[in-house]
Length: 127
Image 1 (tube, rainbow, N blue to C red):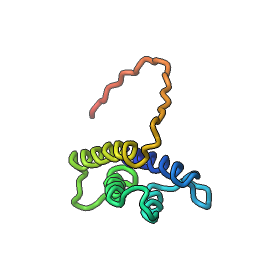
Image 2 (tube, rainbow, N blue to C red; image 1 turned 90 degrees about the horizontal axis):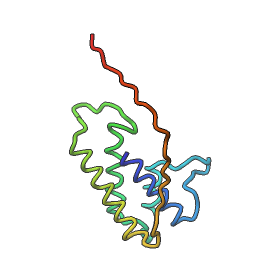
Image 3 (tube, one colour; image 1 turned 60 degrees about the vertical axis):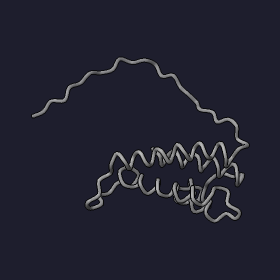
């Protein structure tokens, strides 16, 4: 989910800085790695290089258990990996809105109330 969060922030940044949608010439959304490479090429920097490196590390951490899950011999995703990714994601979010894009003063979130339903209780039966 950290990958998704930073991807959402970078897409917002792309729209704000480049004044266009983050899409390829073939009209598909840019992937996280493509967004990072695009910001890396900018001179002067829009997002500091050290933040792009940290975001790329979060992207790589997220590849292991989630986005492109595949076994890596002798590697086990740990609580520390998750804490590192989450801490860096939250810190980048604060940095982006307080230091990088200071003109953006509000971000709106749409909340939808879903009708209450009775939760179904089910038991796991072991053989």
